[in-house]
Length: 116
Image (cartoon, rainbow, N blue to C red; front, side):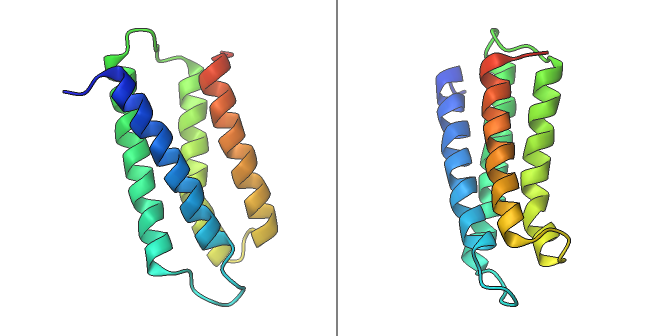
């Protein structure tokens, strides 16, 4: 099917789309509903990242199923749930922005360092 490099490219493109959509969702004024386009892009980005990420793991022999990968999936699940947590009032918007940046940076560090 696709080469490991193409899966990595799609995974990175999905990450960019995810943070673009999170900006649209989290920067919506309080009390207003996020745009349908931002929410749709959020879902599409999560799907692209998931498919491309698992595709890269299955195709690239240099990637192993270490605990770092499970932690990275945890970051992905957190970023998926973040708009719901904000809409339900469980996490303030500005804190959600900081947490999104921290989760994204952690996911990148996990992929680069593979610490465990």
